[in-house]
Amino acid sequence: MTEELKSARDKVLVDNTAQAVFKHLDRIKDNRSALGARWIWELLQNARDAAGRQGVQIRAHVSASEFRFEHDGKPFASKEIAHLVYHGSTKIDFEDIGQFGSGFLATHLLSKIVRVTGRLEDSRGFDFPLDRTGGTAEELREAMDRSWAAFEQSVQDARPASDATTSFAYNTAEPGARELVEAGLEELRRSGPLVLAFCPEITEIAVETSDAEWKLSRESREEGGIRMIRYVGDAGEQSRFVAVAGAESECCAALQLRSGESGLEVAPAQETAAKLFVLFPLVGSERLGLPATGQQPTVQAPRGPGRHRGRGLGRRARKQAALGGLRATSGATLRVVRAEEVGGCGANACLRHRTAT
Image (cartoon, rainbow, N blue to C red; front, side):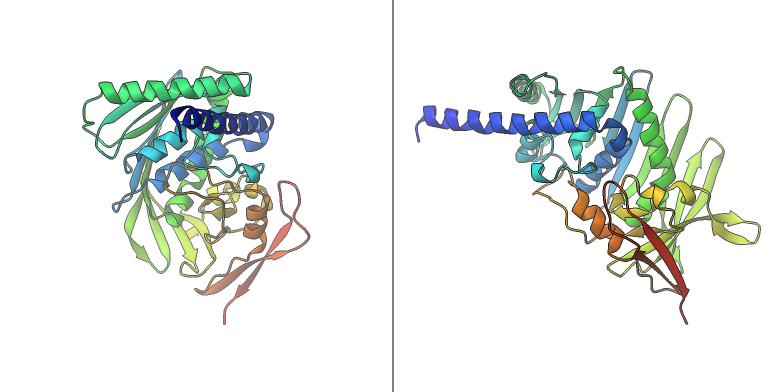
């Protein structure tokens, strides 16, 4: 194949990708209110996919004009950084863009330009602006090309990175961005203990804002199916608990607990926490009114090689999670049973609790 043919082929591929990404960003913008805080879970998914043998630690920093998300996961492979620039993730299945299947591109609700800092597998560092501006697919393609050129230049100019931090920095000056950040961090605070209980790859989550700081970390010990989470905030250090039933089963159920006068009791955060997880919370499931949270890790969602990818959890995955069943095996059985057909962005379900004999 001649260089001219290769160049023509590459341009067509980039043009097609730009068109798909442009449509995806348009849909995200149109569904801004429905997506809400989904962006924070896409960033946590990104960090989880990058976890090494010792797990991954996550940091979120909020200043007057910026939100910065950091993790200490594995470095980028060359293919992964190319997918991030030209696909918006390592890989997205654009045929499954559901209301909640937004992928990493959902984070552009905060800002169309993201400062990406990290390192490659050969330890060279990079620091460049990932640009998603453009009123047309052609303008977006040009922005992608600018991003790639900036990445290459930053690698050429960089010395080997001295740390293993990956960072995504968002300018929150755009209208509504600050409110989205606050909503996302509130969702993280409410469901953070469940995330640590369901995702052993994530070992710590820390958040720092101008008003407060807090941190969640998982304790290594576990007693009777109760997983212990250490919470450190302005009021000092506290122990939080998550009771997990059926952890070794296809599905499991969990309750957030706290210490009460007569022992452990259900924590108030459980009432407003997400009720369905597929590794991470399904947006909108907090409205189901279930007394426990169900996790179904086996729901198959579109995925590609490597990390930094969007999960693409569309309607089919949400339906499977809602109707798949939440079976527990330690003392009680929690099961979600179908009440009527799932439609739109929610599910009508009821919880049946039966004490095991």
